[in-house]
Image 1 (spheres, helix red, strand yellow):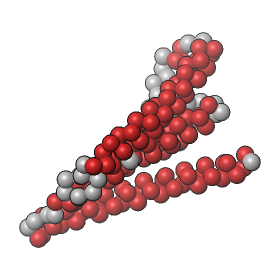
Image 2: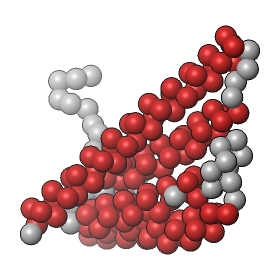
Image 3: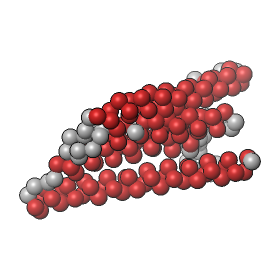
Image 4: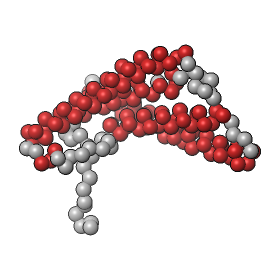
Length: 167
C-alpha cells in the first residue's frame, strides 16, 4: 500500500516538473516569436504578450509547489539554531503546519476564485480568466500534499554549508 502511494506521488511530482519545464520552454518560444515579429515583421501579435504573462504566472506558481516538495524554499534558521532543541523541534512542526495551512488556503480560495472568474476573459487571448487562476488550486493541492509529507520527514529546508576541504 505504502509503495503504491509513493509510486503515485513520484509520478505526480514528475508530472509537475515536466509541466513546469514545458511551460517555461513555451514561454521562451512565445517571447522569441514576439521579439522576432516586432523586429523583423514590424508588428507583434497581441496574444503573445498575454500568453507569455499567463505562462509566467503558471511557471512561478508551479515552481512554488515544486520548491516545497524539494525543500528549496527560503528559511532563516540563524535565530532558530540559537534556541534549545525542544524549541527548534516545536518551531519546525509549527512551520510544517503553516505550509499545510497555506496549501489548504490556496486550494480552497483558488478553487473559489477560479470558478468565479469563468465569465471574464483574458484580454488578447479570448479565453476565460479561469485558465489563469486555475494554477492556484493546483499549487495549493501540491503544497498541501507536500506539507503533509513534510510532517513525516526530518528537517524543513535543505541544509547548505561549506564542504570540508573547500574554502
